[in-house]
Image 1: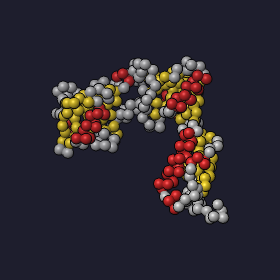
Image 2: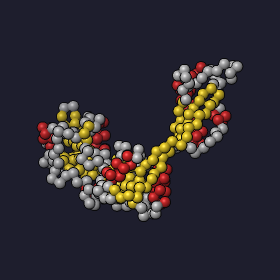
Image 3: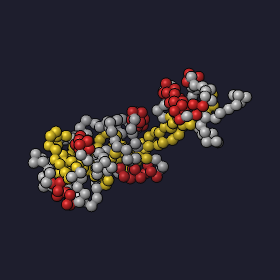
Image 4: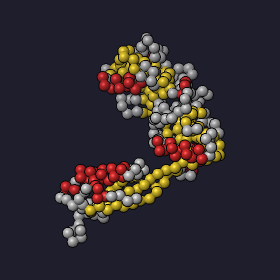
Length: 314
């Protein structure tokens, strides 16, 4: 790749390393459970497919189409069953030492119940996080019930954080019994227990996912793993035997660019160096190659990134 670096209008001598990194997907046509598929990919120093950008989805879809449009295969998307967390006044911590689930709960009804509300009897039930409910905030003096406005779980937490501390998180039986006395008579109230809904195997939260209409639906009661079918996602029981996609990262190549710049000592400052790097990134963007390119300074033996040369050397 050639860039017209003179258009950067920069004036020293620097080296910048461009590392072109991309990844691809490989369909494995050996039916396995989701867990076994994950293990298979990892043994190959790969990963069950993580798909995040539009370009990722295009690559994955192209691999599926190469084997026929009807191909259904696991990808690295799942709900971590039983992995619930307290909000605990900002940082989240795993749920431990207590659980007070109502009978049959949590059931993830409809495939998207990842937030917890306390019932009037003090038990917990999972609900869709977008449901509007009263909620219980933790304050420096105890707890308070908010019935108006009714908010979704995320909105309730933001409200509590801006006015008090956070959503109430019962850390033991005594606290749970105390919080129970603040549950709204109008119905179950949000508390500070949740789980990430759909997450990738690298622990990133799934967002903007292209679900097939009506999915996720948890129709079998344990549809906690995601698969691709005709370019759209469906949730299925993780025990199903399906083909699967491995995620294959690799580096395409590295290229070192050298630029001559002329200027005063300000070019050695972090602000100027950041500006130079930004202009290089913009130039790559203008050429349509920035998406999978890491741009970094190449450090000289003396530890600097800009090497000052004498007039004779220049």
